[in-house]
Structure formats: C-alpha cells, structure tokens
Length: 138
Image 1 (cartoon, helix red, strand yellow):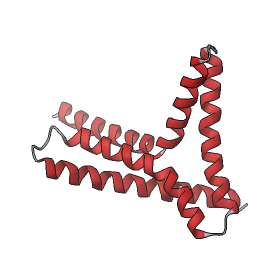
Image 2 (cartoon, rainbow, N blue to C red; image 1 turned 180 degrees about the vertical axis):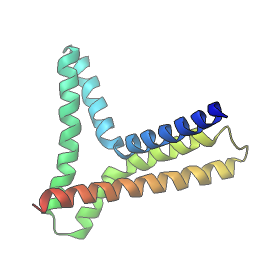
Image 3 (tube, helix red, strand yellow; image 1 turned 45 degrees about the vertical axis):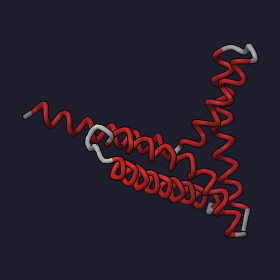
C-alpha cells in the first residue's frame, strides 16, 4: 500500500513540475538556442550559460513590456499568443507522452493531447498576463 501511495504522489509531483516547465516553454527554447549559438562560437560553458539566461529573461521582459505599454488589445493578444504557442505544443507533447501507454485509441490520444495543450497554453497566457499586470501596476 505504501508503494502505491508513493507512486501516486510522485506521479502528481511530476505532473505539477512538468506543468510549470511547460508554461515557460518559450524562454526555455530561446535560452537553449542562445546557448547553442554561443557555445558553437567557441565560447565557454559559463559564457554560454550566461547568454542563455540573459536571452530567456529578455524574452519574458519583451512580452511583459509589450503587455505594459501596448494599449491595443490585438497587439497584447499577439504577444500573449507568441508566448503561449510553444507552451501549448509542450503541453500537447506532455499529455500525449503520459497517456500513450494508457490507451490504444489514436483519436483519444489526440483529443487528450489537444485538450492538455489547450489548457497549458491558456494557463501560460493567464500566468503571463497576471505577471505583466502585476509588474506595471506599481
């Protein structure tokens, strides 16, 4: 009984951690690309890591700046969508990977993956919008 409860609690913890990682998929992708570019230019690991962290923070700061200064709702929606599309793709892949061994139906897998991608993409939009509002409300 203890092993079953441990497996359930670890599965829930893994899902929560993966959810938080999927929300920030765009900064991770930007940071990974910056790391690969700088490391390919024969910089060291430390400089590549600093470039990756800087690029990831700059991508979040750019979206927050657009949210804070743009009054056009369409422009704000475009900025949030640019942040949420990679999160939705990561959410789809996450749910699809978790449930592919649980069911044999390809239609059900795609529906579950699409629903997970939609939920994680919407959560990324809401999370970033709340962060942008909190930053510029002071």
